[in-house]
Length: 312
Image (cartoon, rainbow, N blue to C red):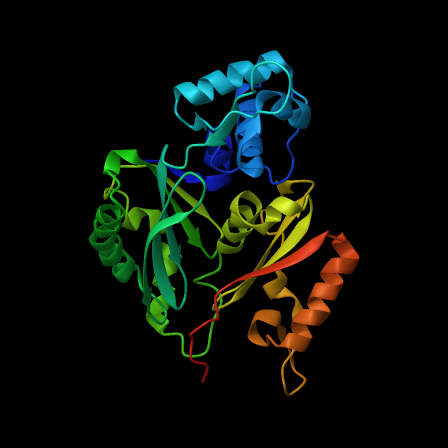
């Protein structure tokens, strides 16, 4: 089992695709890219004909035909109802096969652990969550193997249908300090979260910053479909952000783009602090205005969950 960045694997295999960008390339040896773009176009449309796919992606009808044959052979797409109304034979329409394969998602945050089973279109088939303040590595080690089998059984999914495990995990979970944070929470500085679940399913594990994972999820499965460029604000126990530019997630030069939580702010006494420590509606509005002026995205999307950490 290998530890990878999620985007590298999922873009290659079509489980994460470049937002609203449906442009393909007819260059030779670009099969992976073209398959990913085509599969995403099928997903965006719900059901679609070969001719419509060629129009949207810019690929030739012959290239689309070859890609669709491969996707059909691997059962990643299925024949949908034929399209009637024109002359001649009705055109076949195709849709993503939501049951073609499944993924496990694990979110480890400062106030909870959540485990989900996802199908190929991102729908949650089963979920389990535990509200735990400052989750320790040992808790994750116990929780994952005990829970994953239960969820797969509940969803009626065989283990051999699962193709990978994705983990959303804050980059600075050990460095950032929160009120009430115990000293033993620093254990995360010397623990790789994938090592805690390495041998449970024998699958590849893909780790992504939690805000980046949420942004890519919105781009692939959520309302990010509507926009070529958007900023995503993730509200959790901390605060995070992600940026999509021209249909692609933008990591930045060092992988730290969208770190809105690090913006300077002031607390109630006027002392300078970071935004994550002084989050308020007013502070968020000011920061999002700055994002809008600097980047000018089509939209700012907000998601996540209200934190349960008790501030002292």
